[in-house]
Image (cartoon, rainbow, N blue to C red; front, side, top):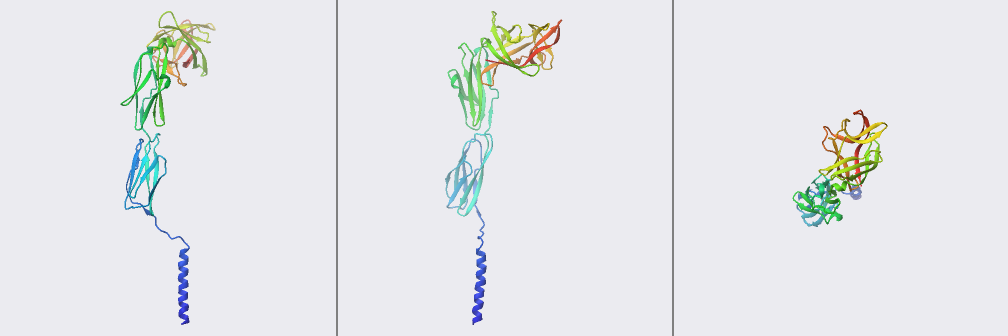
Length: 344
């Protein structure tokens, strides 16, 4: 009888040791995965509403988004509603919605494309002789686009939305001086500023701050002046500080044309003549070859003048040049002026 009780006690103790050893570790339970029946996961930049539908779920559903632009707006037993805000960048972005329902979990990745926009690359428009204009500006995209006329031009410049972009308009400029107006068009974080200038021949007549690159590649500057003469449309130009004589120019098609083969004086015994330098380095000294000054938009947002090839020479013109001429033959350049910009 004693042996029987002892055996039972030993068995109980052994079973207790087995149970105790198992209790020292956490019991492993496989995580349940939610059965997601349907989900909206891809969005264009404009954003929108999304839905996630769950199978065989009745209660205790929660949902959380990893990004502020993806917002949970409603949670029920079998349905999660959310909104995606407009993507104002051109970069694709991704958010994750984490879902729990009782002891089951799941997640859904939401991807939104960056916005697309097609717009006019040219941003400066100049209208000679103060002419009225209607200018079509291409600007379309898949997000909201806004356009604003700068306050200082709101009394004469208008901007109207049309299919494919905007029409910017102005009446004839009767103020007696050039005027520059700007329209800002914005899509998301991208903004383009379009500038519109109305001007006349008389607006060229003033002193200008000239900047350029010299023949040695150094930066040069000076004050160049344009003045009207007794003959309408003919100007007198002086490169002040350069010790050259004045030379003539004329107004045509909204530009100031500067003919070559104009005598500028003498230096070191050489007579100097105005001409141009071709892209290949060849000198051209002829009254039939002209270099033109046309309005341009400066880096500071104001307007100025820039030298532009007018196609009057057989090859591209690269610079305004001063040539030393001896016995009718070009001895070499005295100076030439690359990338000339005249600012007010």
